[in-house]
Image 1 (tube, rainbow, N blue to C red):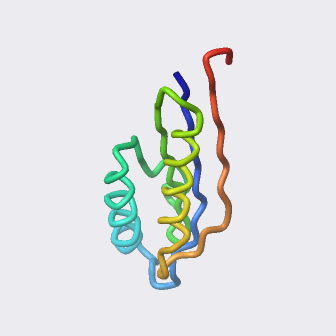
Image 2 (image 1 turned 135 degrees about the vertical axis):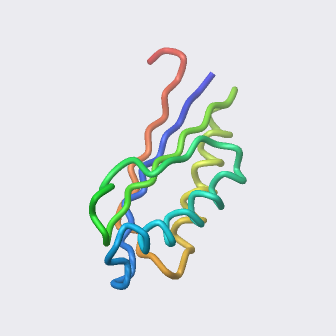
Length: 97
């Protein structure tokens, strides 16, 4: 069994000056990521209006499948034209960890 996590640090557009406006950008991203059948949540920068940290987690029998799913998630987030992906931190945990 392998688990993988990714943390996406994203910069939101300048018009996200309220938490309501921020949610309008973050919710569709979270919903789109859920179609990969993973766990996903906004986990950081909760009180910052122009930034968001979105984390995903996946569990699979093979490390290659975990990497593939995380690659797909990263492509989805990076491909969103309304945001800028600042950084991605990924971790893979195996049975020996």
